[in-house]
Image (cartoon, rainbow over all chains, first blue to last red; front, side, top):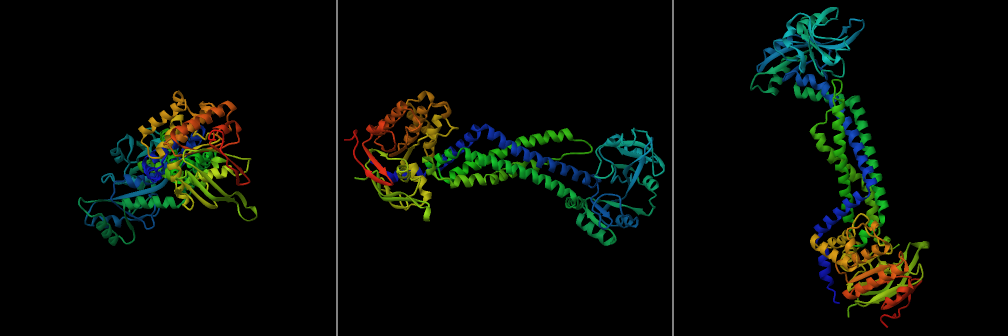
Length: 393
Length: 232
């Protein structure tokens, strides 16, 4: 028999695509064949996804709770005391700033806002803290949103307040028309909001004059000035103009204020706490996947040796492990995100909202694929170092 | 005439320094195309090492090896898988089938790894499995087959793509006497029909009569290379 070695070598050298397809099929079959390892490794990825995504979801929920006031106040620009990093009761400013703002070209509306920390005395004794927001009813900036009962117009009545629906029991069984005492004054409940609970005490809302009375805030003081721009006005230019006119205060655009709140919270304990638990989830998932894949390779060492002996290259085997990593990652991400979605719906309430943004949903499979590929490095090293001659031993 | 296997002065040393062990010592081994040679010798004599070097799964420390006049010695290791795919079929002692693949897919894998299309690979795999008497068991997983049936699948896999050289390492070791003889007879018959060169490492003297030539190795050296009954 004459053997055309050159032709055989040419033929064997070609067909890379077919070889790639064949090895991918083998990789998947090997994965599916060892069901215990498949389940164990997938559960590892699911665990990592659930822990990491749920922690990030809670973090995003908490961040949203602290930025919701800025996001829903309806302002384009804010004039705030220097050093302000949160929308919370604090340093006050002069009402002269309001006049300066109103005189600035490009400003359509400049409205005062007062935010004070106070407490509501309950009928049976004791009190509960609230963050009372006083806003200009005519301008509407900084008023309540997510209203589930009552009408904002009802706040025109003296000593009328909106409370947080989720805190009705906490404030002693509030209902529309209930009367409570705030700062030594009787107030009447005229409406309820839902979910307006920042980190601190829940928001309650009233007309700015009511809040001045309840909190004994002098008539020449306010907490923030909220600016609505005139149509076509350039936000940066108006902000610069306002900053020049109000040198004792800080002028900040709403998106920048939002970013400041987020970065401040992340720099504080929130970022560390949630970052640590997220990282732990990923690390544990990484370890489970790494050990499972390594153990799968050890269990099938003879098969990998056989594949090498019959002519598959180290790269072919690498491709097999990469494919397995990606499938583990995608499968685990899909199940994990599904579980997170169920958990989020289950625990969603005014006190806690788990937010899983679309970017996180899209990024999770990619991050887990990278993580699983990294986790397969141990197994890869073992496979690449495998001598095909081992099949004869 | 071009030799199927031409090994000259081939040696292999495992380890280094004081722990160095010479498994093969200046072995000259030639096999003609279509010849069926059995390598025999006591355990540790170096026959499997020689088979591994011929099979391009192990590189020789010294000497020169040519397969069908293609120089193997001195080639970088990354080129050896190509030589194995192009020229060699393997039958292993423990069949070494991929447990997750059916009999058909074990055979197909070899063909597709050489670039054969899925359709052609399927047809050839079915034909080979029919030739080894397993047409009705082609969809079974290795775990669902007997030892003899698995070794038949391994023979079909070794012959997939009609390699000019088949290397078999103790193909009867895991089988009972009857199945062992049957499988080796099948291997030799199919290889002779195809003109395939075969080297079999074995201890099993019940199959010696199937060889053209029996080569004895002891202490890493060939001590006898006489013709056997089949070729004499």
